[in-house]
Length: 523
Image 1 (cartoon, rainbow, N blue to C red):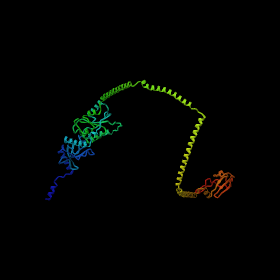
Image 2 (cartoon, rainbow, N blue to C red):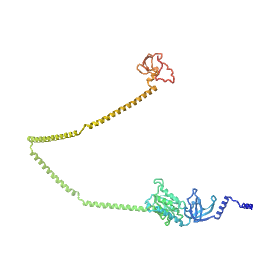
Image 3 (cartoon, one colour):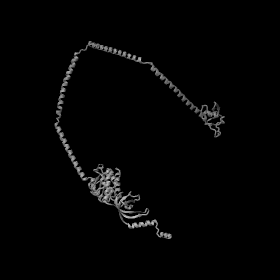
Image 4 (cartoon, one colour):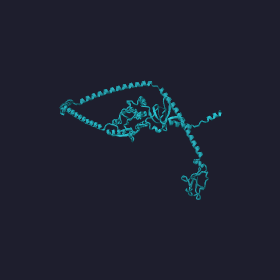
């Protein structure tokens, strides 16, 4: 029985793990070639570094892994987000590496407009609470822009309509930033365009626009979904350049419409908002110029009439000068008579006074008596002042005492003695230092044998002529020349002979130093 049991167990076919996995893969792919799966996105973290996206689809009872390859991601009409309910189209397959099955998605669409609208309303409410849609932060559009930036597709009819409308109203410089206006990357490209325009330098080769227009034609909610991107709404709200949103038709609305500074119903309407009509401006300018000229003319006429009326009310020059002229004539006549009367009076007074020696003596006596009286008063005043000062001096002398002066003198003498002692000590220390330096220098000089006496003590002699000049060479000595030889202990005389007039110096050992100006024997 045991042999039969063993044989029955070995009758089953053996498969490898790879064979089983491959068979399951073929079975699942054959049975579920193309399917549509409805579920909620779970675990979505964006595309992987390779460009693929991995997440899960779930409902209230089950979950299935999902993958979107890189080529498919670029064709999706909207970007997947966490918690979004979608309908995924694709095929089921297995992943042998982990024994799991998954759906490879070829197309992805929202489960209904209701899901997208709910997501849009949630974003709108959250951004509104942050204040991104407040009317107080919106900027005014410039009345006369010089440069306009347009963010849209370069191949659509929208850009042609905008350029045509701007050309008709007010031709100016238009800069187009090409972007995709539909698909998963549209929101990121428009965001990059808004930030790029804001980053342009004011004095760079590409001028910074004065106003931006973000435009796209009409479409479904899925087509316009890129303009509901949260990052795009934040970039539009943070832009320091005013932005006009012209996305979709008048009935369509997106988050960028709420974040922009101005919303236009159509791209053409955005162009009309951005630039004024040149002809209307010229007509307005002409009208204002005419009104200004008319006002200026009327003002001049009114001022001229007022001046003429004021001139008529003013009196003539003769009337203005009549009263001053009369007063001048009267003063002239009175001045002549007054001079005559004054002269007669002075003459009569001088004629009544007679100058005699007695009169002069009397007046001199009166002046002398007045002078003596004033001198006596001055002497009395001086005597009183001297008495007062002498009394004050005596009082001050009584208060003075020689003790404070003596005390100050003693303190000064003590201070002087201390300074003299310190000076003597300082001079002694200074002399000791100089004596030590001198002793050290003498010791160093004796050690190095650098002085003349030290050299003469070593057996050398200094040869000099009768004038006391030092002779350094034998050629300078002629026969019969009187010489003086200076030794260490004194000076001896000598006379040169002819045999030694030009001696040849004998070689000296290298170790023995040679005296400067040394020469051979002269005797």
